[in-house]
Length: 327
Image (cartoon, rainbow, N blue to C red; front, side, top):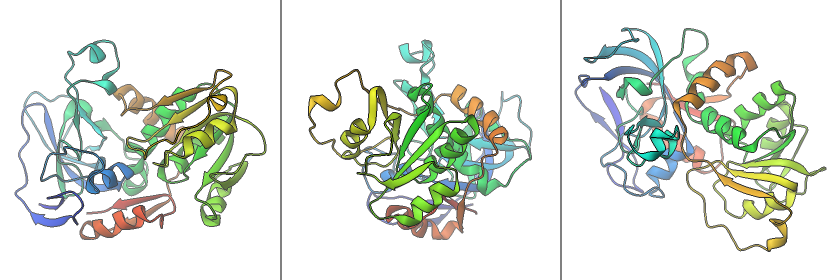
């Protein structure tokens, strides 16, 4: 097999040849057909998420075919198409797992961070955290559902029954969530990097009711705002944009420092929440909903050996939608 490997943070990935792994008990070996390139991968590569397992194969938006089934696995067959997300395993015994909050597990495993991921021709995954995908849809276009889609969905759940929702940072997650929101009949306000008219036009093409710069005041107060861009300065901007009692949800795993802000923009029962990881129930809900909503991902495909180029394009905001590696 071939894999793009991070040997040290803040260095380019290196293409390595490895033996195809055998599955352990409870595991699947997956022949990877597509793996999305997520901003979380960028945080791992750039050293912004500490203590990865090194060397590590990034990638946690995996679509592929079951190549081998480990002992004790039921419900999967060789050749079946499956998806593998960020949450690779949980302990099942800590208070969070027992309370149904496995996304907050005290001893989790994360695909592409503490366990090798999908920037490779093959990957090994805990079968309990893999999801059947059926046969409909293109592998590369489905891959971003496995994190961008899931985190967007969990963020929306925390935003509540809001009608007018602002999306800050119109990348992979926001372009998926905007389609879900329009399908649900909600209003979408898209906020992009200052002067990024291409992203604003893209947002409007997906049904956004308004699109503008991240520091703009929208034409009407927001019921909720979801921040996908890893920019702490967007928190006070979003608080200013939401109505009394409105919610601001931070949807990323990493964010630059949030600057100080006056209490007045938090007052009047505005709420600030963060999203951490996902649960398997989030995945089951979203993977069932996305086809009904007609979600279509805009993707740029890269061969496996061009993973560094895909990461660079994501880092510098050169993408419309999502980047996907196609081994």
